[in-house]
Length: 317
Image 1 (cartoon, one colour):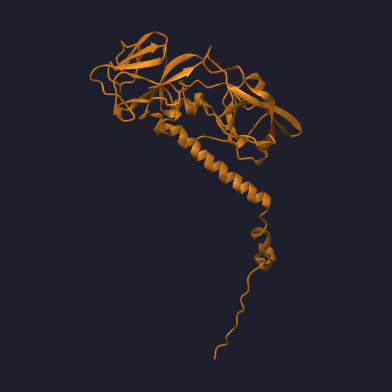
Image 2 (cartoon, one colour; image 1 turned 90 degrees about the vertical axis):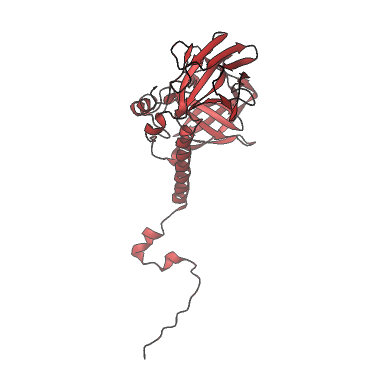
């Protein structure tokens, strides 16, 4: 008769202890650092996916098709060349006009031209700008526009939901994920938040964000400081470093962090540093890194800038 073997099963308290020595190092050498790195990489890869998705969303920066400053009381617009503002061919030849008033920008569509707000047809309307609580977006065929207010001036920001850049935009490029560039720092608060002066990519257009203080962090034995800007419940940084021009966007990069706790501690993860919108189109009003925020070091982490690929993909049409 065949022999039977009785098998006694017990919980495995340490499965690695039962593996041959040859397999032990391969199967059971995962350290806490390895797990932390794997978690960080998964987190950053997820962030990169959401970054690209936000660029390509209907209200992302790849759909921008124009930026028109309103300097006259009356400004006509449409696709015909005799308009003050010439829109893409998707627009009606003479779509309407913008009227600059003390209350803001009023749009008056030409009779018979269908324009919408929140999917409802509209006629004359005050186009609440992006600094108000409820900014208005107007849609017309594949186009949409909003009014932005910058440094006391109004402009019409135009989008095309069928912009060719959506089909041709290449993958974003990044430095390798590096846990050493996830650094802890401290927000040294001012006695009171204050307005600071900064520049933008548009000559003569200023930017005056609120700053709660300065972020201080150490890297490779050196102390560095970055002026922080208030952005809702988070902190926003516009910084430059020695990767600018050759590897990253010349005017600097953006970075967000969670707001600090009572102890002022923050985490600056430069793996999440990214190019500003003006890296992809000519219709943005991006702030540039101030001299106060230009670091004398290379930060080989975060998003790279491929000038030829991006400019080619987002060229005007």
